[in-house]
Length: 212
Image 1 (cartoon, one colour):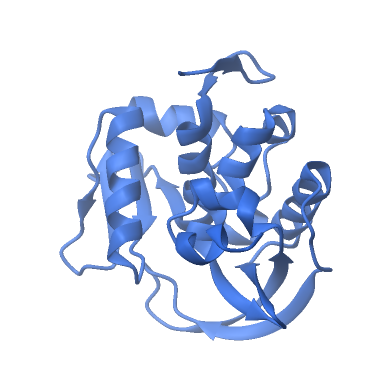
Image 2 (image 1 turned 135 degrees about the horizontal axis):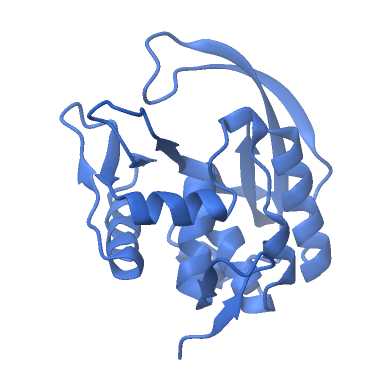
């Protein structure tokens, strides 16, 4: 069943759990390019994961939702496609921001519980990992934006998910389309209650399902 819900500005609509899962993933590992007058116009990109099943699932989901199949660029570092219509939809949904300025869009906080969990799972598949913590497991999300980390924590609180404080650390990292590695500040959030996220996850789904 597809649940259609208008977002606050009434210009676009959100289409159920899969749409929200894809948006969460694109917020974490996607970016928009629009160089007016150049070949790379209205370009949507997704970083290549180190997990083949994640790449396969989100390429499939992107095509299912938007009707366009992302292609792997020749260097094998990211997926891309061109679509003015899709680009404008993602821009309207708040995804057209550099990594250090990303945030959880306001409309996400007004979604259903299932859609919010799906959105978080997409973020975990993009920027997170399932890690052991004591006798159990947690999802660890690490992002370059303090505002995004704060939004993730706020969303967890709203959903009643166990969540850590925000930890800060420096890392030297090379972005997919950068020429040189750069030292950057990252913000980390750890999320428990994985059994509630398990139905939406690709990474670590089997582990998450055992966390009762």
